[in-house]
Image (cartoon, rainbow, N blue to C red; front, side):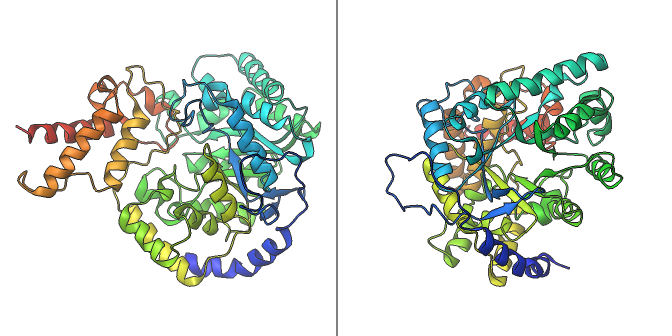
Length: 479
């Protein structure tokens, strides 16, 4: 069964569910200033039930890209001070317009996200928001810690999250980013040894299960990157009754559903992950609905394909409408540091309008073209940073992808071609403007430290040398 048939079979349930859930009573307790009332719907958000019947907004607020003072986000500039006043304003507006799911982690914004999220949300009644945070103990792996010490540090991390978030229970708690296996220098696809050290051998998972029984964790789940054997193992434990998962967080979007492997050979087909959760009736939380923002900034040709069909819809709205077609999706996370992004995403989910067969076919064509467009699959998650040798790894990849999308990657041909000269000039000029020369790709020494942390399993040193060789080729052609 292809995706259009698969989704068509779901459409009746989705429409019925949206009709039932949109308009649930979520009264506003804090008003936002500076925006015309009614500019964005306040009472049409689509909601989905979790395992216990709690209604969750289809749009979830990811607290990784918090706004910084002077503009921009903490994901792209992690050293800059976070603009707490703007965080409060965005959170207020989100709650006022029906968003109730807020996702953070101990490691986001270099450890500041939980604190800022707690400050913003604590100003609202506790029943107006749902908090998700994570056990981000992956940096402890491979340090030779005893099981007792690993357990102690992990429990301390969990309790500190409650303190920073200013809560006495956590609505959704996750085992953060399971599936990676590089910490042991073994096969990058072998995530089981890391899973065992992080959660099984040390007794950390048993502790979290006990916290759920005590009510301090309302829902327990995990976020997945990497080795599908780990994903399958966790679901087998669920099937056998050893560990029960209330929800699971996966990467999914209209490209990853069919072309995950084309984008990155180690990615897992998103529709497979979703189907495995769906048949067990486990709600799915979606990360990277816009593939690190790339589905919101398509190249001119792909953007024109969508704009011709719906000139007044944003590119991002197509991605959210697509996810809304899957009824087991509980919420889709978006990191929003700008008010216009928040407003646009609220519109897309208020309510989430199902795609027609023609629109699904159009997205299939866009996804096919995107998958064969040789962008680097970096989502700017910053897990690879800081680089020991000072490279701006996400910045380099973002610049390359931006030039590729804008047609500023010089095509094959002779240096006399006018288009080659234009693209060469645009690439080299913007490279030096965007990335400090001491942080450019030619400073990579292939130490491999970044490979231990990349959830997309990008062969970062190889990509750095590709960009270095390409840049040198352009510079040589100037001679």
